[in-house]
Image (cartoon, rainbow, N blue to C red):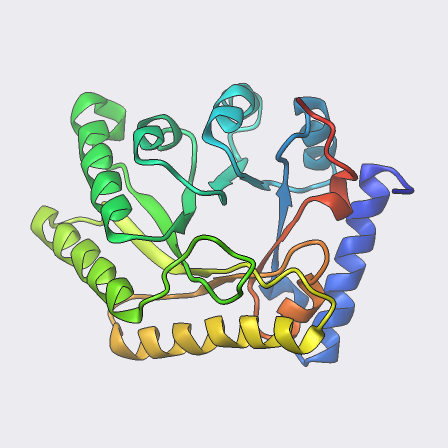
Length: 248
């Protein structure tokens, strides 16, 4: 892929602006996340120096290897986990991530609540700790994760609200939804996937007026412009920023 990281970021930002104008939106309402999976600390530093502060990692182990050091020098970095999360990895990711975008089942929400409560008790400066979450929704056949059953999603949201109420504070803060479109050249299928997520968000917002489901995380390097047309508020872009993944 041609160009420097700086040049690629500029190109992505230009494309975001064009897509926003096309559908009558304000580009300032669309966040750009740099997906840094398999990319080095040095590459992340380059992106940071271009003004990017929002980063997504797929694997807990890799995030924990790279971001504690980065957060020491750049505390304004917002790290979010966007990949599948195993229950035994929650304790590791909670202290460094601002958001878990891949909450896809009730059991995971229950374990996040348990670990977050423990973190509050074990660490004095984390007594008010809370974690933002997005509910990952299965909207395309290529995706292997995400809620399939709307009733299970409702159970999970209800559990989170009940937990927060019992603690009289927000331990888990639901802020929206995330999905992956099918890997296809058929733009109609991609549009349909993103439209499905937007419609689900609207139904859940109507059902849970106490919550603010402001975030729609959808769109990656190959389809973020389509996602913007369908209402995405956060696009997750890796290859179009960093090039091919080379970090081991």
